[in-house]
Each structure stands twice: as C-alpha cells, then as structure tokens.
Image 1: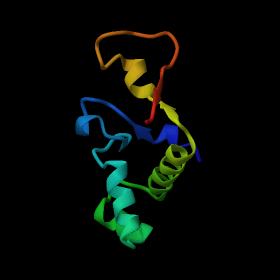
Image 2: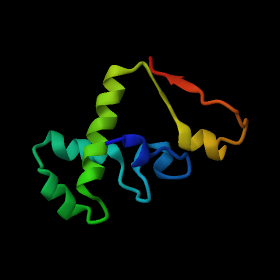
Image 3: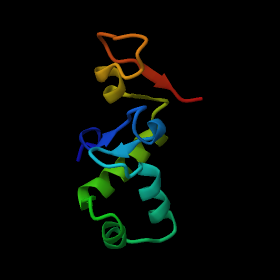
Image 4: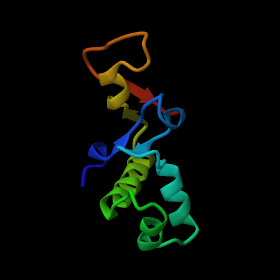
Length: 96
C-alpha cells in the first residue's frame, strides 16, 4: 500500500489539508474517527466515497509523518498550485 497514490494536498481543497484523492474527506477526519474507537466499517458507512484502502492509506500517511522530518508534497508541486514557482525537482517541507 502506497499512501501517495491515495492522498492529495491541494491548497484549493480543504484549505490545503491532506485529503483522500478525489474526495473532500480529510485524513485527519479518518484518524480522529479511529482515535475515538470507530471501526473501519463504521467510517466507510459514514463516508461512502471511501474504501478500506483509503482508511489504510490515512494510517500509513500518519505513520510516515511520525517517522520523517519532512514529506514531499508532490500534488502541489506538480500542479504549481502555489503560483510562485514551478520547480523541476520536489521540495521537502521540513516539520518543526
């Protein structure tokens, strides 16, 4: 499972929060539901546009954030949605 294929960060969608690609369901919403004890089935019932793989991608994304000090934001870079540069190589956003 590669979360990069299922999670998008776009400043034009949900204020740039990480979302499941093709939806406006933020990764944080999925993780918040899991944190309070919701099952994958309950989440899928509440958000019918999601799949089991989307929930797994959210967990994988969160795990990556805890291991890494930076995460490349490909979707924003490749579409130049920030409007002030169009880099040829990915930037790495450093977490404080």
